[in-house]
Image (cartoon, rainbow, N blue to C red):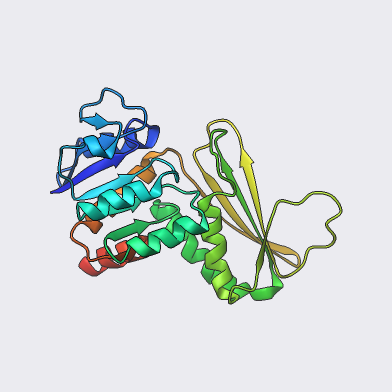
Length: 255
């Protein structure tokens, strides 16, 4: 059994994780931490210092703020942590690298199985199509999302850019007389509106033909399910950085 502490338990994603865990035979939520605690069917605390329960893994669906606090708590209690939020700064990423020497850290910009398959497909397409095709990424999210472009869009761009040895530069939106598009660009465009859960499209535009690879999330439940899978995977893991590729490799090896 994997015992989980949900960070951001009173939020929408925390609620999705809690809902899934109610019927899970291999994992359970033992408590939560939230800046704005709410009455749930698990204890929810405003601060880590109030937590009484023991857990194996933190599932973090809060925000990028106060990252060190949660990493300190995980290190002190020898817990793994699933970082399921985005918007981390370069300094935050260095901190994650530092703590991954002490604890198991699972970080993915998107925990959807479909998105991770899309990532592999986009990388394969870039290898085949090469410099002959222009690459543009369009991401769409709800009007309450704070960071842009999305972490998933950047994850897709980074995967594609690996094919080009990191030589592509990212152009986030275009405005005014920007001149003709350069081959060294990957365009990234953010759309915000309504209650869009998450849509990502990668367009490879060549001469007289266009290849589009896209993914649409119908609900937040797909991300919650991925976080629960990640938590189960992380229990008992040695210190280090892990992501969906590691999880899928282990699951496929077991099959």
